[in-house]
Image (cartoon, rainbow, N blue to C red; front, side, top):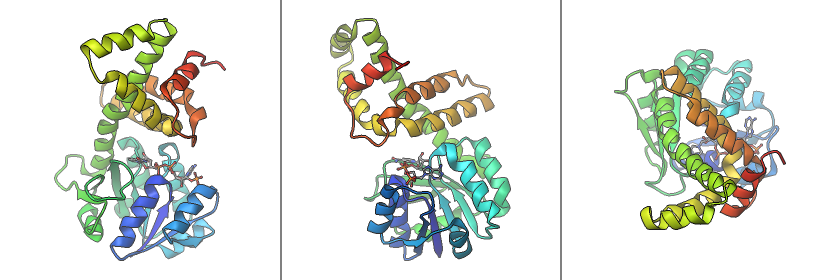
Amino acid sequence: MRVGILHPGEMGASVAATVLANAHEVAWCSAGRSAQSRARAKTAALTEFQTLEDLVAWAELLISICPPASALEQAQAVHACAFEGWYMDANAVAPATAKGISQLFGSAYVDGGIIGPPAWRPDTTRLYLSGVNAATIAGWFCQGPLRVVAMTEAANVEVAASALKMAYAAYSKGHSALLLAANALAQNAGVLQALHDEWELSMPGVVKRSVATAGAISPKAWRFVGEMEQISATFADHGLPGELHAGAAQLYALLAQFKNQPPADLAALLQVLSQPEE
Ligand SMILES: NC(=O)c1ccc[n+]([C@@H]2O[C@H](COP(=O)([O-])OP(=O)(O)OC[C@H]3O[C@@H](n4cnc5c(N)ncnc54)[C@H](OP(=O)(O)O)[C@@H]3O)[C@@H](O)[C@H]2O)c1
């Protein structure tokens, strides 16, 4: 298959590696992308197209792996190029957003959701696929290292992969936001050390997890804003309160200044959260 990756970010580059490992061809579109994406594409030896039109004309399958807030816009740009192949959205988007994208591509749409870190080794990361073509497309990537799982039995199968990703990240990234928020509250109230002392007594490991969460989250918090907004909308669509993740979106937005920086320590994050206006 001729597979286009939109785009070779941290996750997209690793998905491209799996596609190549399954003996397909992989290309990318350099228009508008940063030096970091270019470097990842070069390392992976991906074929470069300079315009989206040229990539779309070449590809039989396009895989969208971009910031969730840009997923619909990305799909619309591809649709505007009269793409005739398969389109997979593998972003962390609400089922309602995925349905909107699916309407652009009809039966050629495949819904995707990725769980786990960039998939450089086996058994770390799953790409869930749903929709009528899920099993067919999963079969093209059976060599890994990314494990591709077709959700053929799921209810609401058209967008089940997106629903699964929303529920998973609601807990994982919602939990990280809650942990940082509790630390920030204690800091602003002047009881951070007391909270940490109490956690060491009653919930050992939570202080360590707070420190690890700060480092892991800080460079990516900007991207989590859109994801939390998609999760909030998903809760509301299912008759559940969406405010928890709307709040998480606000918290991650305050941390956007750490975008693409080295991992920050907890104190640096709490300083920013303590002075949100600055
Ligand atoms: N990283 C993970 O551990 C992980 C895990 C599970 C799921 N995912 C999902 O994978 C997707 C991408 O995550 P990532 O970690 O690969 O992010 P990333 O490293 O920030 O890469 C995002 C890619 O999209 C491009 N991009 C930036 N702005 C864009 C826009 N407005 N329109 C189209 N493309 C744009 C970036 O290009 P430039 O920066 O070069 O402009 C980059 O190539 C997200 O939907 C995320 O939820 C990631």
